[in-house]
Image (cartoon, rainbow, N blue to C red; front, side, top):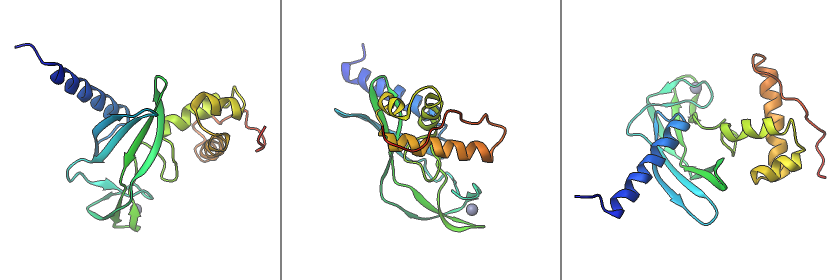
Length: 174
Ligand SMILES: [Zn+2]
């Protein structure tokens, strides 16, 4: 029997889910669904079974999940021209050292509303272009770009091994 159209579609979806799961280095999480809307590709993420989550502060593995928070979304690099968004309900883990803390996300820094992949790409482009130009390129507003660049600079100062981010400009809309 030849695979039906529906079978093919499902197989393609699985391939996309696997691709994204690998790209995001998910181990304790998984992609449950990829949804195409008019504005974006929405990637639904969930915890993978009972895999242990890490504390968002000290990154220690935690045995217990305290509770499940409201859904959050993160902007990721675009799939061609379609923005990719991750959607997930963060867990709060009971860390033996820190107490109840929001888990560590493998795809983003705890405070960030964009993924590490996107913020790295933005920080790199912002060395070449203005914040406005960078914002236009990635479909973000310039304030988001400013936040990302400032964070990247702070990160660069804290982690000297990584090359510092150049070309930062004073914060002003233009
Ligand atoms: Zn901790």
